[in-house]
Length: 246
Ligand code: UDP
Image (cartoon, rainbow, N blue to C red):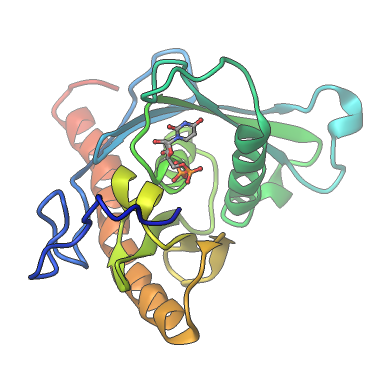
């Protein structure tokens, strides 16, 4: 984070490098049933991000000491492919992926009716094939749909988006350049119906006013992104009606 003087992120009319206005999302495509062997799956394309999520379970938690006698344990594993970023990423977990897996597991636990499945685990495998900033919130948005696709009872959907600050302005859904060279990055995920915040992290600095402005942009955007989640799930049922894919 930090703006080198040669990278101009906003033009004189406040338009961003990729042509978006401050409150505009990148294009989002989301679909379910992309994998045959998972209990539920989803793929999201969000800007240049391409992410596949596979859900398995609930099944008996193993090793046994990881069992919770009162509820299912959600084990999300976020993984970035070596070829997903400009500079080849060393395969395997690193501090960042362990942290993202943890915050995603916690956010999903708030949405799933975990109390219905004591002693079990629900695995959520997240594979980032191409990364373009905002992968944690795109992963969560898709994971929530993959869980619903697996038929796992949920009280609500998790839906995420980021805001950030570039050249002193609060903007929605940071691009890779804005994430790299902007002044702040605030990924947030909420429960769609209640608006309860289930993930919030911040890199950089925002004033209280900028934070409030950003949160209000997030709430408007997540309502729209939730519509995309609902459409992705209903498309599946449309296909079934027509005798198409199961
Ligand atoms: N990134 C990268 N190499 C890495 C980690 C991240 O190039 O080892 C890029 C990737 O495009 C990612 C972006 O930096 O989407 C922002 O990463 P951040 O840690 O802020 O998480 P994200 O915004 O993806 O949730």
